[in-house]
Figure 1 (cartoon, helix red, strand yellow):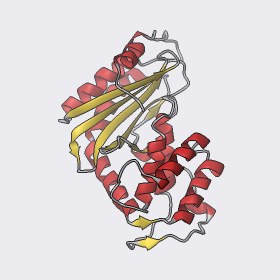
Figure 2 (cartoon, helix red, strand yellow):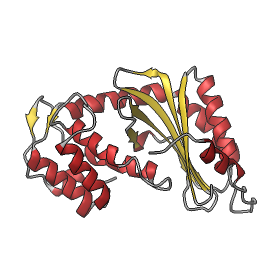
Figure 3 (cartoon, helix red, strand yellow):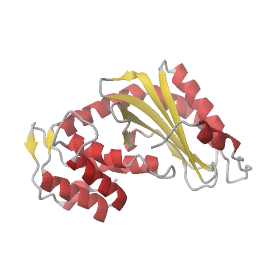
Figure 4 (spheres, one colour):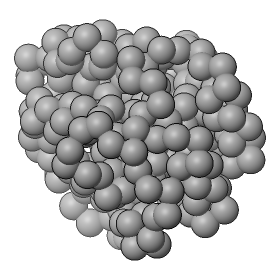
Length: 255
């Protein structure tokens, strides 16, 4: 699980920022932290916590900011970014939620305002884009609430669980063998009560629970992939219903 530790923050801030070239214009982690915090303040949001994780001696970094006054009894708005100095990751922001009882992440890819390579006019582009993006967090949160409620209304039995997890592991490479073992353990003996037993929402949270140890360089995209996988499942309009275990390939297309 990513921790908001002094060590992580210090490692981010002391990592040397690469020199700018004609084709590469880095944005420092410090710039992103300051810009995000200022945008949160200007948007009228109440910041509950901010957490950071690093890899490769601070060259790769993630930031996550949980908002206190945009949420409900189960989850709160969360703003996240990823950045790198070694060009391994593009600068990217995403909106999602933090599940209150477990701090599981829920990240929706199509609410990512931008993914920008470190070139061109990124330094002038970033501040305005981030500010406008964060101001739209309320709308994104309402969409995520609706999707959560839809997931709760889809019942899944053991056979469907096995099929979906098999697809995520064998065909889509979304989860690892270690994560699959954690999910199996959670299904048998859940650490948390997600308020919707034997539902798609419960399975979703078992998967994201297993991703708490995801590497900083993959954390955001891993969560986006999980959300897309579940959200692209053909959900029926009636509630509740048992999903047929025979799912056609085109029901689980990624991106």
